[in-house]
Structures are given as structure tokens and as C-alpha cells.
Length: 100
Length: 170
Image 1 (cartoon, each protein chain N blue to C red):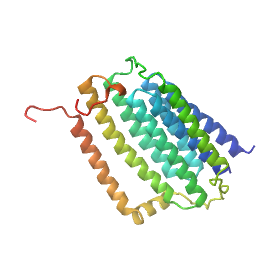
Image 2: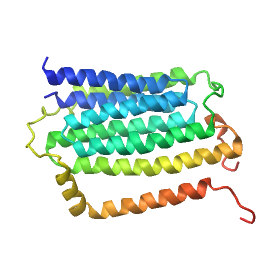
Image 3: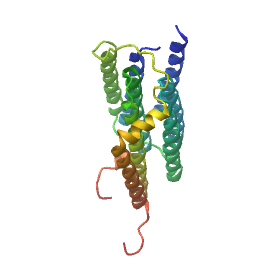
């Protein structure tokens, strides 16, 4: 088998790419996708740890992370659609006041 | 080089390449499609790691439902072709430096720090089977499971309330 460190390293690389996406990109949709990538990276690490320690709890936790991510995406995309309706733009730099 | 290692390296290269593709694509649609590919490769990693249930959930929930929602919103807004002005000139180099710091730190911890763990043991035959997951989910983790259903309901109601157009007297 492949050593566990390789999986954790891959997870770290994916997490860094996601963080870079959040910092660099200007489109809130792509920022959202980068957040999903970071969640995915942490899920990969959790599943790898589950495999090493031979307990199932990590996989259950990944399942819950997936459902919470689905809920988060639904509400977040609804917010983006609402912001687009009021401002007619989704440039992240223009989202700087609470009251549209 | 065993077969397992070659398989891992090829899949990891595909995984990182698709993640980078998502990062650098100018069009949000291409980003979303790269991310679907990335989720697919991560699902194959889950299968290798004896987690078939999680792999199938990954395909159906992430690559299926969530990314369809993303692509739907991208096409609904139609902002894909708008020019994206770069507001802060120092932002990109600063972000790259910070990301490099993060990856160096994580790499140090993974390969030299206390995270250096055991090699993966031989799993028992049925480890991580859907029966085991279901048993754990409906016995030990029943309450969080039910709370998750309430959370999904709240998210659904919230999304509908947020996106409905204001009608007349409201």
C-alpha cells in the first residue's frame, strides 16, 4: 500500500490550491468552488485516517461534512443570486456594504 | 514501484492538474467542469481507501447535485463573460506568497513532523462496507443524522425565501 503520508500530502496540496483560489479569484462563484475544494481536501485526509486506524467514525464524519456542504451551497448560491438582482454585478469588490 | 504507487501517482497528478485548472480558468463554467473531474478522481481515492459508500456519495452529492446547482446558477446569471478588473495590484503576489508558506508548513508537518504515522495496515475484508456505515449511522450517530435532515430542510426553506421576488404588499 501507499504510505499514509502521501494521502495527507495530496490533501495539503489540494487545500492550498483551494485557499489560493479564495485569495486570488474575483468571481464569488469560483470562490465558492474553491471552498468546496478545501472541504474535499479535508474529507480526503479524514478518509485516509479512517483507513489507518480501522475505525469507521471518520467516514461518518465525511458524510456529515457532505450534507452540511450541500446546505451551505444552496443558501450561498441563493445569496449570490439575490445580490446579483440588486447590484447587477457579482464582482466581489463591490460587495462592501450590508444594505444594498 | 508497485502498481499501487503508480496508480496513486497518476491519480494524484490528475487531481492536482484539475484543481489547478479550476484555479486558472478564466471562465466559471470551465472551473466548474474541472471541479467535477477533480471530485471524480477524489472518489477513486475513496474507493482505494476502502470507502465505497463515501465514494458513491461523493459522485452523487458533490459531482451530481452540488455542481449541477453551480452550473445552473452560472448560466442563470450569465456573468461569465463580464470583464473582471483586478482591483488590488499587490493581491496576487501576496496570495501566492501566503499559499507557498501554507504548503511549506503543511509539507514539513506531513513528512518531518509528528504526523509521520504508520503505514496503512491490511484491512479486514468488509471494512467500510455500506452495511457497516449504515449500522453506525443509525445506531451510534442517529441524533446527528436526524439533525442533518432538519438542517437540509432549513437550507431549502432559506434558499426559497431568499430568491423569491418581492410581491406587492410584502
